[in-house]
Length: 291
Length: 234
Image (cartoon, rainbow over all chains, first blue to last red; front, side, top):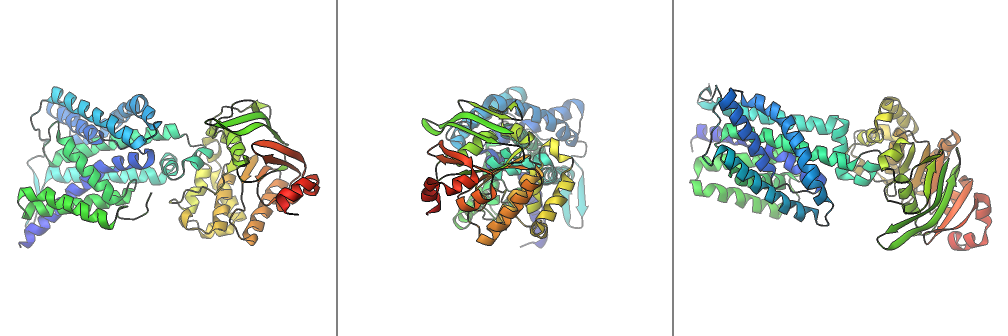
């Protein structure tokens, strides 16, 4: 095997893996903290990508700026979605099932709205630096890929910082680990759930923009993204940020390497074969903590 | 002063508490005793606002509290150390303590409060970076009590603080609670260690099947033949 090709695809894999990780972090949090499996998470990510695409093509605004601008926008939108749709469902007996069905419908609605607005053709994000590349010896990195990678690292770091260092972030973790005690010390579960959900959706937006810098996208792309979300969260452990980041890297590396060396039909076979083998040995994720 | 007046709590169609009344005077240490399933924890949770009380009233320093959410109750200075500690297991000891001062009203002085808690429990200071889930039972109870102190309670409600602890660790916890009370904190102590509890409290309530079966000065309850027979095995 060609060593340069191996290393090049390894690095590409790491880059896409980090992007998967940013897309998955919020999915993992809503699942862990609220017991809501948010099927439309990736669709919101795709919505972020489309918004950035329009801002870029119409106004020439850089996707990184759009990511920063769309985060609060998606946050507010998600607060509304939470109040209107998610909150009633969290009172259901089977929160996980009810939330899956509800947000599955929401994903379909979002997909069709995006198809109406942006048409079904595949799009690519072409910022000013789209054709540039960083060449390091025999290695070659397209600038948009580097920007998407950097954006996802920044996004994950921000989520990690929020959860570790802010009172609200600590309340999110506390509410997840021990909701009753969290309430006793003043945590309002309803407010924390809304913040968790909205934060998750806004990180999905940033993740969607990152991914759109690496790959082309169309209105139904979120279906494939969703499968990767599940993959990353199951490997990383539900609600575990560090695990999610690591799982993103592992899965990115596997797909990166298999894309370079295997016929296209084999890529998903290898990736999901890995998931099945992984689940047999580590049913609770990388750091087996159960709940 | 805390006054619970004739409250009833139902879980579905089951009455967990029926017309319960109770009082804790300022600076007083009161005991709430009774067997398993008598409704002791439900009563604390009703005061804390975790479970809704249907009839009656709950008041604190003349203010009506019934129907308040738990965060409002905590803001009033009524703080519960729940049964089984209920620490945040995947957070460090220090993070657990800091979460005790989550409310904006107590956040400001939380640094001093933290230093004070470490003064009371030096062992928690040694373990500050350890995950709460990895502590021993006694240390967990210290952390749970420390977390409650971070909320700067004026009424501290303890639910079975000695459950599952070694006699030495339990004595340590009781000694600290007693000291806190002597410094002016009102305490409502729920415990199955009836003899010990009645020895350190002034007044006691005996809960049976969701209703107050007996009440009076702790010293009198300790001599009561019925209490002796049911709870002290004498």
